[in-house]
Amino acid sequence: MLIIGERINSSRKRIAPAVESKDTEFILEEAQKQIEAGADYVDVNAGTFGPEREPELLCWLVKTIQDRFDCVLSLDSPNPAAIEPALKLHKGKALINSISLEKKRYQSLMPLVRDFGTDVIAMCADDEGMPSGLEPKLKLAGSLVEKLTGEGIQLDNIYIDPLVHPISTDHTYGKVVLQTIERIMTEFPGVHTVVGLSNVSYGLPFRFQLNQIYLVLAMGRGLDAAILDPTDKRLMANLTTAQALLDQDEYCMNYIQAHGEGKLDL
Image 1: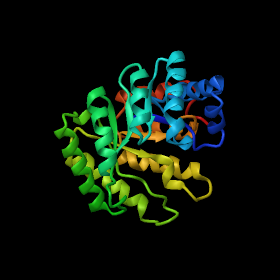
Image 2 (image 1 turned 90 degrees about the horizontal axis):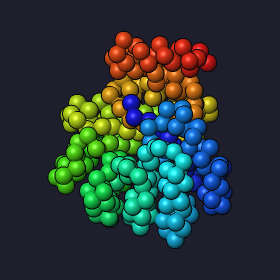
Image 3 (image 1 turned 30 degrees about the vertical axis):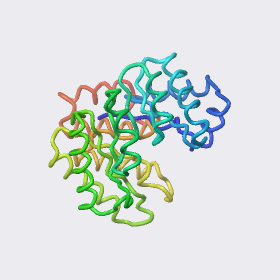
Image 4 (image 1 turned 90 degrees about the vertical axis):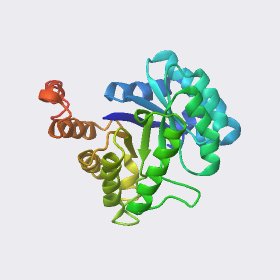
């Protein structure tokens, strides 16, 4: 299960002023907490500062974090003017979050995915919007796989995001995405699926509970990557437990180790 730590996002109230003032220690503390909690990627986003400041601030985030930590970053922006200089600074293979079938977005980001050899999150969206139904999502997923592999991108480098919508706006949305994940993983073997986990609970009370249960349900359908808060200890305990139950943890060694470290008895 690939874990993308979501916390360094300028849309969060505590992160925005830290990014704007270039508060190095605060950002490094946020990165360290996520890495130590099990994040494989640390997502970095400076999008709320607009096209004039985003390139500078995204590059600052990349350099600041990678100067201290040997970690891989998820560059979270649709803006090629921010992504390209950040990729030039990034050490190792980055993840671009994200491309879609929106014509302008695809044409501007695809060359960067190809030329820099990145992994890429590919959202089930096009110029007509973000469909909420199973079949339209699946159709866009197929088109993304076809177009990206046609550009020479390997299946193992593609993470299809079926786009979770809040169940507070329609109670069917959570189930539809679970069905979409299962179909994608069955019909396009070798590709990955990813979700922005916390979207499912937006607008509802006690969001942690919904996020924690939804992750386990999605893993049961084949989900193998998620953008989430790895510092949520119960969420991570559930993830470890689900891996043991889904034959993703040989001889339950990770589960046993987590128990020994006190990570399950919370």
